Amino acid sequence: MQRWLRNRRTLPVAGYDARHGRWHDQPDHRLDRREQLTVATYNIWFNDLHAEQRHRAIAGLLAREQPDVMVFQEVTPAAMDIICAQPWVRQHYRRAAMVGEAVGNYGMLVLSRVPIRAATYTRLPTQLSRGYLTVGLAVNGVVQNVVSVHLESGKRNRHVRARQLGCLFRTFRDTADVIVLGDFNMRDDEDDALDPAFQDMWPSLRPEEPGYTEDTSINHMRYDMKDKHRHVRFDRVLVKGSAWTPSGIELLGREPIDPALPRVFPSDHFGVLCRLQWAGVTDPAGARELSAGASAGWSRPAWFPTRAGSRRSALRTGRSPGP
Image 1 (cartoon, one colour):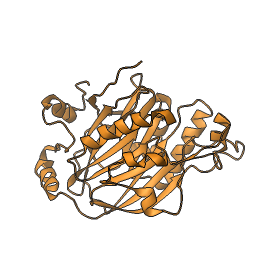
Image 2 (cartoon, helix red, strand yellow; image 1 turned 90 degrees about the horizontal axis):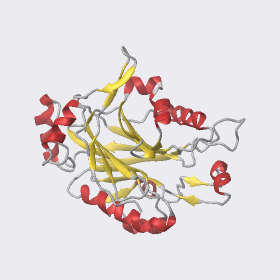
Image 3 (cartoon, one colour; image 1 turned 90 degrees about the vertical axis):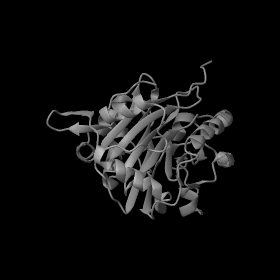
Image 4 (tube, one colour; image 1 turned 180 degrees about the vertical axis):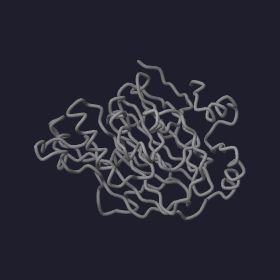
């Protein structure tokens, strides 16, 4: 049995260098202002079934909206190459990723049009290489925490998910404004494990609709995989604090990728796109902190460990000091 592991590592933030034709570590010291923030989450399914076509279809879906922040789960190196090869991604986005051997098929990728001041990956108590990827975004004078999460799968692992959520919520207990989105793998009867400080966007905006992100009544590929029906809302967007108020939410990828492949969908999950409106900071002190640190291009997000000076230094250079 795999040991329970919990550690955090700093991730480099990369931008695309068109001159040299590659992504490389590229700190972004801009201060961005936005009245609206669009965020999207997509579990893109690591399975080899029509993988290249599916991942290109997902990139095409997202190209129509070009959300400010996109988070992906089950990202393999090949999938990341496809997504990050899109011209619109290369031109407008920075990326932070935890992909490859350390996480197997459960890689995570964040793409952001908003400047990323810092990025970390935290491994949760898990037997399935699960964790969360946090980015601190410089927007409207504050560092806004956005967290991509992938919790343990399987009905029998509900207690593991509850423990993982406890770890996550304790990390951000003293942080006023947080956006958490991704694949929670939760059934509706597990909602009592959610911290009431976090608002679940789908039932807040569309309470009369179930918002299933795995729905075999629509997604025939998902049905063909297991030969049984499933209707669950695994993928969610949660918001803590009053800085951002929800204005809209929708599902992505509810159509086959090609008329010639009527039973192949972009993923076994649907994506979720959420629109948020700026309402003002919950903690004005945070705005002063970012403004004071702007000239140096760095302001420590609330979630970043104060005792690890080497990690703060690593964020400036884009190098990781390790877990």
